[in-house]
Image (cartoon, rainbow, N blue to C red; front, top):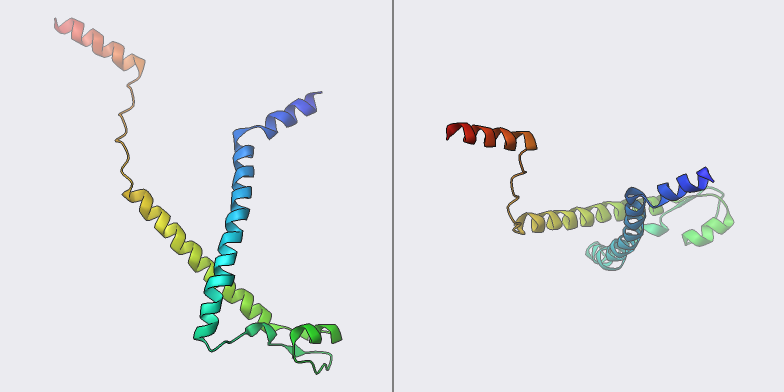
Length: 138
């Protein structure tokens, strides 16, 4: 029964629950950022570069004569360097979007006025020594 009790204590610790919440929110946030890059940013980038689509750039390694990457993969091995370029470009754009978002969040945190922190209460020994000092002055 000790194993189950230890597991329950581990599972309900604040750190584990915080991590679970972070993973769930991170997954949802990842989908939002992924959609932002794929549905909003990449079409604009593609339009700026004349409708360039790297995803169908490949070198057939098995002598295929296909015009699309999907057809070429059906025929054998393919060196799909265009897919890598697309993924690398998506990563750079995704990193840029996340950087800008984090930078804005940090800026908003700095601008948000917070109540001044009260000085910490002195230790009990200090309070007693001050009382003794004040009593001796009288």
